[in-house]
Image (cartoon, rainbow, N blue to C red; front, side, top):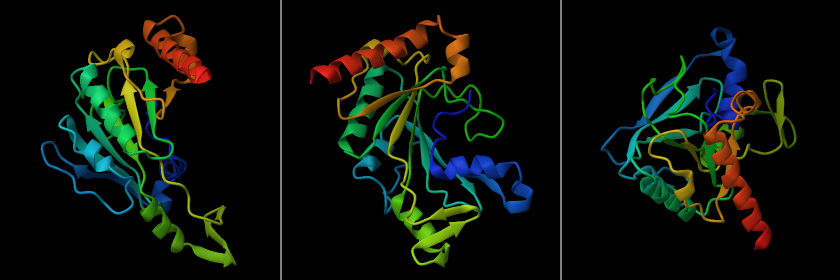
Length: 227
């Protein structure tokens, strides 16, 4: 299964370029956090997201970069041991009050570590936070060639304004032993989505984990209709 965290302007563009990276540039990972060491807030981060980044369960953090892209998205792994830990992370996510803040529910027991990933198989990480940096995107945009008044280009793409940074998104892998969806507390102001591929929906339509995700989303919809 593809990582549901990699859903942002920068990383989507990277995916298109990786196939020909020898011609266009190079790609890789840069560590941005290590276990037990606090992270310093950067310009362009959503308000109070540093409190979430520095939660006691946070282990490592990384930036997936490509030499042709703005590379504004950082990701942070959380070794939560219980649903109480996850609820604390969600509470800190809500405290950012960031537009578009989201909890993303994904199948799997851990962060999906493929052949090109910062974490390795067996990482047992039930939650990963990803968010972008609008200041970095603005700087990248300002350096693009202006081909006509108000229009800048990047390859075949044309922009009249900077791309919007990825809102803080906490992805939870619901089959991890730390996760009990029935006890997950997600404030109404935080969006909730399922990150499940069409293929997985077809293959796993009878799985308890998928049914639990859909049940949570249905309950959220009904609660929203009553408000």
